[in-house]
Image 1 (cartoon, rainbow, N blue to C red):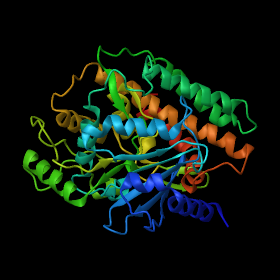
Image 2 (cartoon, helix red, strand yellow; image 1 turned 90 degrees about the vertical axis):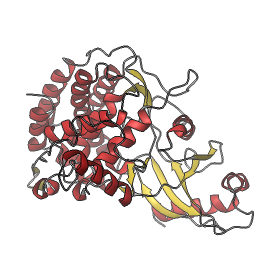
Image 3 (tube, helix red, strand yellow; image 1 turned 120 degrees about the vertical axis):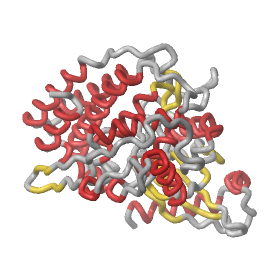
Image 4 (spheres, rainbow, N blue to C red; image 1 turned 135 degrees about the vertical axis):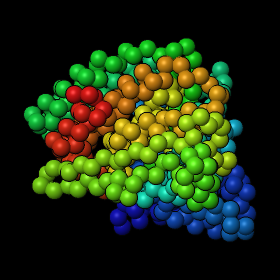
Length: 404
């Protein structure tokens, strides 16, 4: 039995024997709750299941690898979803099991969210506007004084420190490569120059995801169509302003011979430069709250628009002009609910730090994968790490994110 089959069997047994879970989701004592694999991430195994009485769907998340800065992954995520519930844009937290008999390092059950994963290789008109609205709605949730989430003194400086720690692990391993290390040294020096970019009062007071990958945005087709119509009305043209041209939408980054050939997406103007207010009434859901912090919205926006993020789940690289258009859509969606503060300077620094973090993650993965082939990993990580550490990709980052 392989790990996937074993995980599914454990999930099936867990759902069958957990009376408290059944009560939490409102299922009858004798109902058969049959799990089906929903996706495997770096830290969690996900299974969808339904109540056979009425078809209501749920997600069982089993933690397999903890995130940093806390010891109880599932409780941390449950607390984050509880704090963000007023937004109406995150899965409902329904059940938490962090006891010794829980599978993995603990499990939680959340509501199932409808919608299609954002896919940069197949962007629909309106998709990026929905993502901007989702991010703005979540960031606008007031943070209570007793919110238990991690509150770094300075999220930007803490992120830089996290990168340095990962690079230290890489340098101490047999996997260190002088070619990669030369790039690491150059990028780290550039990032160090902006690591102390100051925040304005009130900037670091929002719940931010810190890892808003495109797969974390579930957007119904109807929502994307609504946002596209709004964009067309704003711009006075027949399509939404956030859709790259056909050539840019493909934006292939093909690997071969140990390298990567890069093509960066081209921007259209952001629709309705003078427009304000909602870009979409019901944009979908923002999921996967594994490691949020109370911090700076610039971190999420910069991570989402960084080419290191878009390339992870696709062959698309978001260029600076497309990123700038998304930023302005985001602030239209915020619609005055909080101040822009020092966003513009911090966004530039966080975009640099997002790229550095991706390189640091890949360097650490290179060291860990070589040290222990049994470690949990995804097929995507195995495929992408060599591409991210190629000269072609690192040269693109040095130019577009670090200004080198």
